Length: 148
Image (cartoon, rainbow, N blue to C red):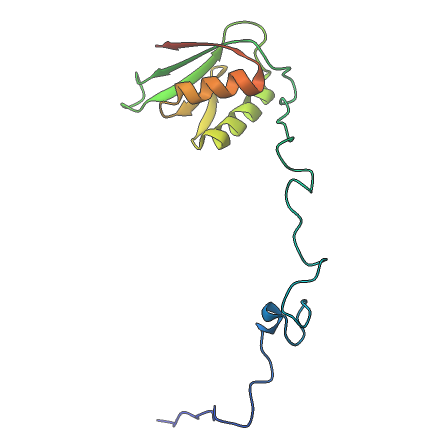
C-alpha cells in the first residue's frame, strides 16, 4: 500500500487563482473597483428591449383566426381521463399545419399536452373555460361551450 501525498495548504499567501474574483469585482473581473457591474455589463429590462406587453401572438400560417368553435370535455373511450376538445363547425377551420401549430402553442399556454385528432384539438384535462377564453380573446373565435 502506498502512502497518499499530502498537500501543504498552509503555504505562503493566498491561492493564486480565484475563479470568483470577477463576481466581487476584484482582480480580473468585469466590474470596477467598487464591486458594481459596469453599465455595459448590466442586463437591460425586457420592456426596454421591446419585448414587453406589446408582444402579440400571431396566427399560425394557413389560418386567419376566427371561426365557430365548440369547446367541450369528454371521458368516453379515454380510460376515464377527461380531455377538452376544440372543434370547428364551419369552413373557417385552420389548415392541417396551422392546426398542429395552434395545438402546440395552446398546449404550452395551458401547461398541458395538446394534439390534433380528426380535425379537432384535444387537450388533456378539463380546461374548457381556460381554452375558450384563450380562443376568444387571442384568436378571435366565436366559442360555444358544450359537453359530449
